[in-house]
Length: 142
Image 1 (cartoon, one colour):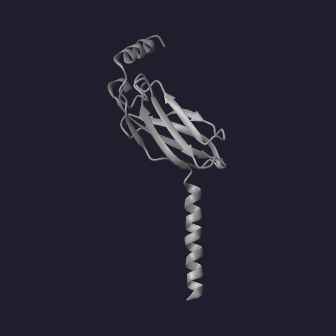
Image 2 (image 1 turned 45 degrees about the horizontal axis):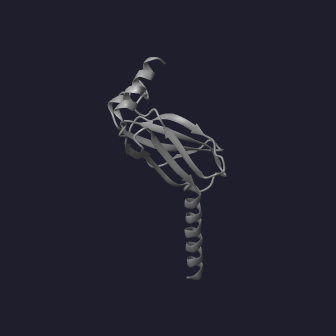
Image 3 (image 1 turned 60 degrees about the vertical axis):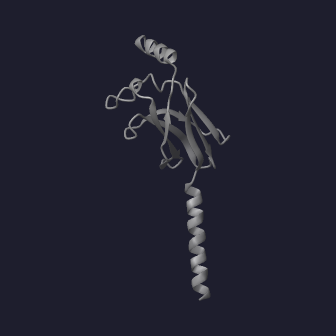
């Protein structure tokens, strides 16, 4: 009986250790300030991380990489998406100007080139009409 308990205890501890090593991100959220969308996350560790890639979608199906961030050792990160309502992610996706709901996820690329994703977060972006109009005017001249 003692041998079975020892084996069970080793198996449980191994599973806990394996699970704790795959959980790299403590928190991941996105919120609108009216002029931009802030995407924030906190990493538990960065020992095995090569880079973070912020991805955005308007339909929660087709995601496009919008930024790549190298780990800096600070564990807390913020990406400000100033162009959420101005850009089109891809030809397959509806224009972002026609929506105010965005989905974000974080791709965590490890040093061995494997990767994990965070859960997807949704934010309703309420930009001012002036900011939206100015952004569209700027896009015409790019």
